[in-house]
Amino acid sequence: MAETRWREMVDWSVALLRRGTGEGVPEWNRRVLSSGLDNECDLRVWLGEQGVTGYPQMLLVMERFGYPDVLEAWSDALVNAQYADRPELRPILDRLLAEAALLGPMRVQARKTYVALVSPRRTFAIVKATSRTRVDLGLRLAGHEPTGRLEAACSLGNDTITVRIGIVSADDVDDDTLSVLRRAYTANT
Image (cartoon, rainbow, N blue to C red):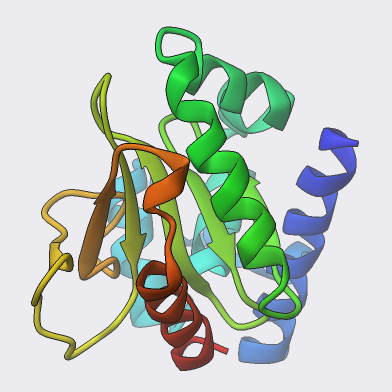
C-alpha cells in the first residue's frame, strides 16, 4: 500500500512536469545531463530558471542524484517512527487525519519528521510531533496573521507553512481547529 502511495506521488509529479513544461521525464533527464551540472544546489537553481519548481523539480533532482532511502521506506514505518517515543500523541495525528479526510480530495504523504496533507493542488497542512508533549498542526495560510491559538510557524516543515496550532491532546482538535484546517484546505485547492 505504501509503495502504491509513493508511485502515485511520482506519477503526480510527472504529470505536473508535463503540464507545466510540455515535456516528460526522459526529455528533462536529457536536458539535465546536457547541462553538465553535478551538484544538487546548482541543478535546483538551473531548473528554477527553466521554470521547473516544486514537486517536478524534486522529481528531476531525484532522477539525477538518486531517490533517498527515506522516500522508499514504507509510509507506515515513517509515521510509526515519528511517534515511537511519544505514543500518547498518536491519537492527535489519527484524529487530524480522520477530520482532514472529510474536507474533500486529498492525499496523506508521510515524511521522515512530519505528515503532509496535500490537496489536489498542493500541501495545505502538516502534522508534526514537535516535542514529547505537543503536536503542531502547521497550516499554509498566506497573509494570515497569527492570532489566538494560531502562532507563527517558524521552521515547521517548509517555508510555505505560515501558522501553526499547538495541540496536546486529541480533545484539542475542536471546532476552531477544524475551521482553520478547512480554511487552509479551501485556500490551497
